[in-house]
Length: 363
Image 1 (cartoon, rainbow, N blue to C red):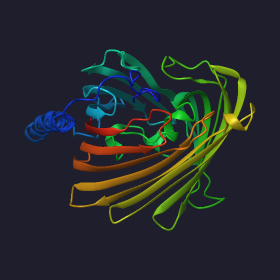
Image 2: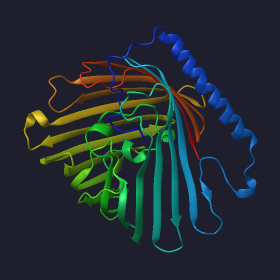
Image 3: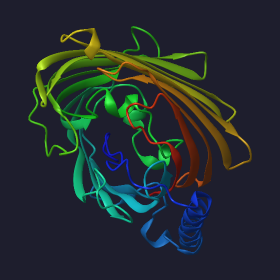
């Protein structure tokens, strides 16, 4: 995924003279890519190797499977040149035998190629290790995990892959308030004897992150938990807590409380997440935010998506408001085209504003 703070560094760059023309060109580029992907998906026969786009590839009888995703994007943001890029090439490798053991890894080649990338933060090519862990199923309700995994705070960070989320942009609180990965130990599973459908994760890290991303500030230590419970028949509510320190601020102890909610019915979906991060440096260092997002089906494959975010960054006097309005076209569950306009108020943190679009392919 794109690094959390990979916003354009050169805010003095001139805005394109004809932004509408730039947007049209960008959309045309993504549409041409989409037509090519669509033609490939329609014309290629995978029956000989038992492969379906979006479902991964099983390697004979080894128990090993391969998958992944790719994302191309076009952006025309305020105070930055327009940008066309291949953002992600991600590879999943997982193994599951007949016993209790399971292995999973994810490598993500970020910022593969981009136009107008000179002088922009986070544009260097980088092979990121997103996940690398080994699971052992103690029983039907308890699994032990060791390695590098996605931090279980909220839902967005765990869904993770760009073809599976509704928008090209990512909510601010899902990248800025906590490290998105952790290296350590986890216990997760279900507690049916406590409540039907209750899910839990308990995790601990002492730092030493496997291949840390240089654009991120990883945990130096962390102890946290996440629980989720079904509500309203078609919904789920979750709560998060973590106490942690980060490598770039070892003298600051932080605690984070969070909630997440999702409800879906008849292809409508509403989701929300919120966090409050406390700092032992004082209230001025606290950070908090919340967002709500609604997806509405317009046709069989086309959805309208809207999101509103409120975010208050540590040591800032004003609260930033961000709204997103866009479309999501799911040609298949594995091929997704997105476009959105992003606006803001009191944007003292230089969050992206303008037009963003992407074409995502799930292998």
